[in-house]
Amino acid sequence: MNNFDEYLMNYVASFKDNLIKEAMIYSLDGGKRFRPNVLFSIIKGCGLEENDAYPAALAIEFIQSYSLIHDDLPGMDNDDYRRGKLSCHKRFGEDIAILTGDALLTHAFECISNSNYDDKLKVNLINILVKYAGLEGMIYGQLLDVTANTNINKEQLFEIHDNKTGGLFKYACLAAMYIASSKLDIEIDYNYYEALGSKMGIIFQSQDDLFDIIKTENETGKSNSDSRNQKITALSFMSVDELKEHIDFLFKDIKNYLSKANFDTKYLLEILERMQNR
Amino acid sequence: MNNFDEYLMNYVASFKDNLIKEAMIYSLDGGKRFRPNVLFSIIKGCGLEENDAYPAALAIEFIQSYSLIHDDLPGMDNDDYRRGKLSCHKRFGEDIAILTGDALLTHAFECISNSNYDDKLKVNLINILVKYAGLEGMIYGQLLDVTANTNINKEQLFEIHDNKTGGLFKYACLAAMYIASSKLDIEIDYNYYEALGSKMGIIFQSQDDLFDIIKTENETGKSNSDSRNQKITALSFMSVDELKEHIDFLFKDIKNYLSKANFDTKYLLEILERMQNR
Image (cartoon, rainbow over all chains, first blue to last red; front, side, top):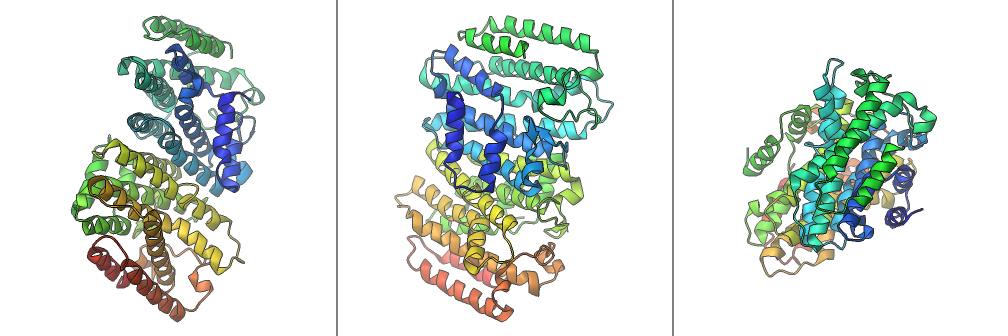
């Protein structure tokens, strides 16, 4: 277990023992922590320590985990497997899954509000967390997703992915800069970092669409429900080979974009390397 | 429409038009605003204006509304009616209801973080909102509620009500004092105000248990699902007449408790008068 996972599990361990706490631990366990690692790699590229970003990263994992639990519910995608095991509602029942998602979402804000950040940084982080997780971010992407018909075009699919998957990557990039600028003399180019998060999200989702087809459920650790739910994915618009090529292009594009960054990009490039080989 | 309702609806109107926004407005509409009124009555008793408390009160209504939407879901209480009309999932579908609850919960924090309060007050309010709405407050009460068996005793029922219903009343009382103390030289007696909220919550829930039996669904505006779901209520331990007497006792008790308050209690006493006659 790495340090961040220890920090995460210690945080949850401080709750009173009960079934929701158990379901929280169950659901948080086994995540790949991609988004937190993006945040850490930028923080380190600014010359700060990884753990300077732990509270902000914890909020990401709480939000990510709640959204997967609610997304898997029978009233949503109705998925039985997640992270290589039964989804939360299959393991604990639907009522506990709904409440566990609600608890993770609620306490995501506490991860920040109760941290040792100064009040100004806390408020900035909470504002961007709402912006990218809420009705103009991730939840908006979910709405587009559940209401999309099979006639949507590439641009509309991009909008879904950019909001649904991109939301927390955008938060990760901007959170890193808010934390860095609270300690160092660094200017926040809001648009640059938002676009960086957007690019990361699109790559991540394009890979997921590909893996849903070329990998088994055993390998992805989750139900590949997109075809059952007749979901439009990147593969509705291109072949497997074309998508692979497109993903290569996206990696080249983001590396080029990073050459204009105002932080040392070597740690983020390592993350991208790992993403490209996952 | 009073000023607070205008403020509330203007806030929601600022979201981009979509189905979740529509479902938010649908669900927020028709609430009795009891908890916000408790907050306003204390604020006025401290000599401040009602609208000094609008952002903190808006968060209450967002949390209250999300909790009702999720509580009504088929996986929870499975209630078809709420506030005199179809419940959110009956009107908009289960997926939209889940997402609308999530959106209200997420943006409850924005009501505070994006307000004109100073950063210290914002952080204090967010911390108590998590405390009383989260896994050590309202959600804990929900957990006790969904896992309770029919053998629970009076004390356990009290614990459910104190967390589930009392949570937002406690937040209302303490939020009032945090706002007042940010503008005036007033000391916050945390325990006093938490207990005041607790007393308000217990009265409110005891009345609800009574109304579920003596009023029709038409009068309460919601499904009386407690007996269908074999829920234990105050009436599992006493007769209708005994409960009426008990509620009278609770009103006497809280009025006596208010004689020790450090604010002018006349506005809150008016609220209690209205509660007693509802």
